[in-house]
Length: 152
Image (tube, rainbow, N blue to C red):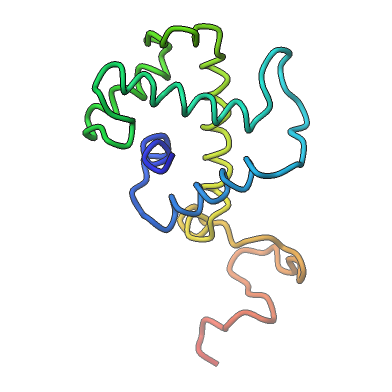
């Protein structure tokens, strides 16, 4: 799952991807519901585990190894084929909702990615207002707890 998240997010930093994978693992173990799900689509944990299992089966049929054992170019090509639905599934897997799997893992990965503090800094998000709230709304002014820019 680590390499799949790297490809989907186009991110190579270990600490960020490890954070995303930890989030996904926690979500798979959680008993908290998902709010909404299409009829006929398995639960999040079943959907993600089943999709990863089918991904490995496809890789074994084509290349003789799991997804993690493939060369980087083969992994990229395979993910692109999955995203464009241009892939032949193994026998007995044709009814698996591949589109829903890819949407779910992509949505979960992006949500975790943008909750990482390093990414907050990169996109200019200062973090949540709680508990102190925002005081200044004028451009260029600082809040009382912030360092002054003039060095005083």
